Amino acid sequence: MEPKSGHQRLRRAGDRQTLRLTHYGRKTGRPYEVTIWYLVDADKLYLVTANATRNWVRNVKSRHAISLRIGEEVFNGDVREITDPQEREKVRALMDRKYWFTIPILRLGQFLSSIGVIRDNSTAFEVILSEN
Image (cartoon, rainbow, N blue to C red; front, side, top):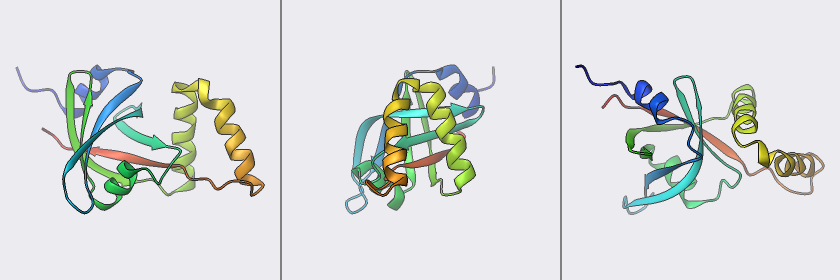
């Protein structure tokens, strides 16, 4: 029996609410773990946050290699920050679908950002899975 690809394992990991992200210190290189939300769209996996100043975000911007645990499945890969507005909108729509209960808070934040009361500090990353 041939081993399952990362994308097949990703589909099998299902629609859990959170995953465990292992990221590496931007200065020390030490591994750290955090539980975060994630999104899956076909064969793509995204990491999202409303607070781009969190340590895990700053670390993955500096050291792109990561490891993820979703249930019993472990994935390795690299991240790519999403900066394209259309791609960010696609990720926002995925966020609305999976974490629908956050819509009122996110819309309030978008409104307050649009009128200059707060700054949009959200970011998203695509995970490019390694075949392992």
